[in-house]
Length: 362
Image (cartoon, rainbow, N blue to C red; front, side):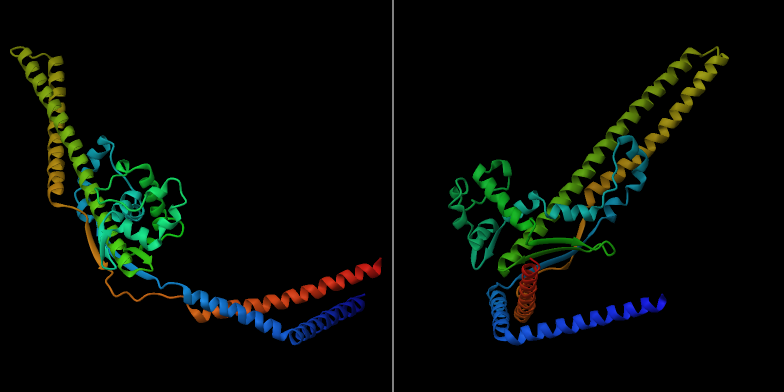
């Protein structure tokens, strides 16, 4: 029984080897027979890939690398942990992830686009430069709303102050800048805390100008936001300080009144009530001292501290542009078309044999 099985296995392996050899010979004959057509098809694909890569504009990468020092702002916050729970404040959000998210927000990118800058020797708003560089007006002529837009006037950035057509144009441009195929890339290294903002565009002046504007708006927003948070906490601590001070004053008045009532005749129950008032008064005095210290700490932080943005790398002209590799774009379609053409020829023979067998069987 084992002998028969081994013979069958040897026979099947021989058939596989024969089939592979036959397949190799068939493909070899196909290549010989259609060599010129296969080669022409491959060369056509190579030429197309080469000229496509050559026609693409070079891309300039204007890259900012920076760090944000937040320790100064959080140095005094440890002392506030007790009272923060009473205020209902706190937060464990990643500040670096917040900065990355803010860099792509409409408020940041919109303000950056409304920044005046010089591009190709012309001074104008960055949003107007982008409209001209991308020739958006040509496509907007067919739009019933956007055809009204030719350019934006210099103004303080405020979305609600824009017209419907201007908002539609603005949001379309922001979508190009930070959309799915965004020209603005944002990232940060969790180990080092280094944040990267990179603007990829084919015009060097525009790439540098917009990257600078986004970075500056990010710094402004984060600084003002942090200052507002400290001011908010300062107000809360001040309110808590006033509340404790009022409670202490009430306790002291109650204690003095109780002392006057028991003057001359001190009963046991009066001693218990007086002792309770004294304990409450001492507790409030301790709380008042702690709240006063927290208030003074926050006040100093508000006066002297803000987020410290440190630039590691800043884009300056000239930037070495990146270009598509012409050789790579030529070789890839060359080999793909050759392999694809051989495969299609083999499929054609297979289908022809299959059709022939079906006719014979009928």
